[in-house]
Image (cartoon, rainbow, N blue to C red; front, side, top):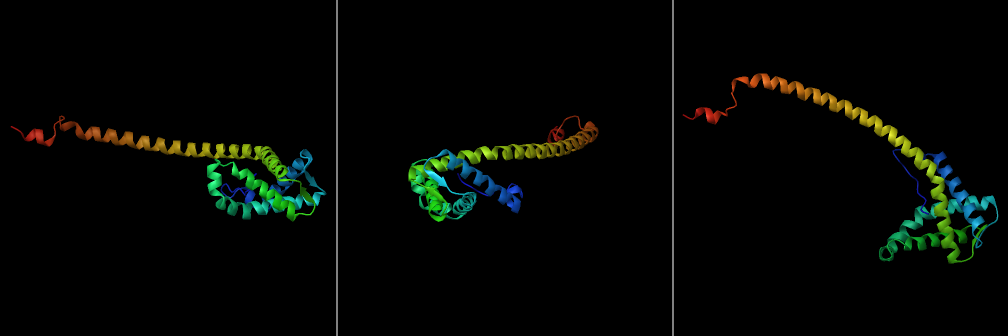
Length: 181
């Protein structure tokens, strides 16, 4: 459920429209989670939008502090304690936004899992498009490196033919072998 601003070489999420898109996707995830779970209630669309803003701010400000404080518990549970941190963030957002209500810790835990799953599904097209862009740029890089390697191979082969023409008078002896009587 971690909501971060992704920056892949000055990527889409660093612009203003990218942040708004990310908030819109999180708002959709909040609406889906509230629709699926009986312990989560949202009264209006504005409550959904404010919930998305508050969750995003809490994830970017409070979550790193909570992760550092609970690092031993997270290490002992092999990362499963992060789900508890996500549920705490959901409960904090429920206390801050008036139109968003979560009944219990269990509902917050399930809501954070639903948010994580919906965010993953909403990010799939973006990951596919990023992969296509990366493949195109890597193909261009490979073409440039192939051209460089071809030039290096040509230079090496021309150097070898030049060396072979100079080494014909030596008969394969080293200078030390020629001095011996």
